Length: 303
Image 1 (spheres, rainbow, N blue to C red):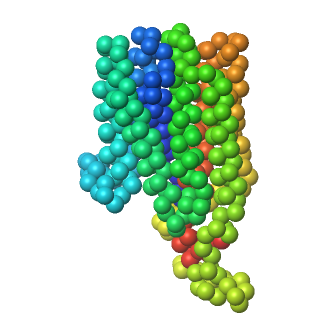
Image 2: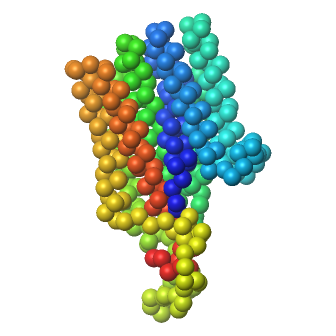
Image 3: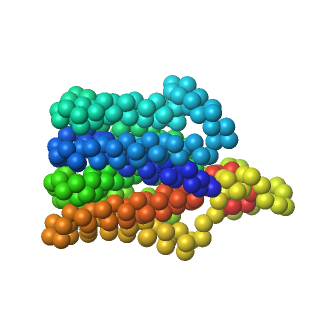
């Protein structure tokens, strides 16, 4: 599908912010005054900034409030409701923590659960679409959760480095998360390479596959259309490989190396790790949308 910049920014930025909320809500991180202020503000700003970015693709932004009304049946509506609840719970938790120095464990756990549920709901918006095999036939929820938790941990590490606070968690745990992220992304890439056999085809759609290969007798129209631009966006194989490699290296491998080097060279390397992770995730998330081809593209002769 045609990758909308607003959705890419939303899923990347809010994912990192919600990942931060998860770790901070679980009580992981220094109690130093400067750290708790910076980490809390950064988590809230990333989540809110991502949410605002998501309205960029709306034709009538004043109707954005309607996304809260269909929570019984829509994952998008559940995402909006859960994000608002997570930000409210974390905002109260952070306010008490920053102003009073006390962590309310129950409130923090509630914020963490709501943050994880929000990321899961975001992933399910795409994973539920059986008509897009590259989303439904791959571990999309696991991929989103791994990226959010990894990004949140890196962001908290950067906040600790900027404030001179102790590392929020052992770098060994960060290495495990980074490795998990790489595994999830490469598993997704492998599944995406075979998505033609996982989804529909002209043969399965017409039921004529037993007779051999099926092709359209005539194209629906001679020119392009909105559906081809939005639902059958095509990415060159070489470009896709380069972007996936760039995303995996900058998004996970570089932060992993920098986190390990930070043990000897200084925690300031976590700031560079965060920058690299954001750039890498933007590339990977762009590819996530660009490679997602709707099965209706078969009607236009796309394989």
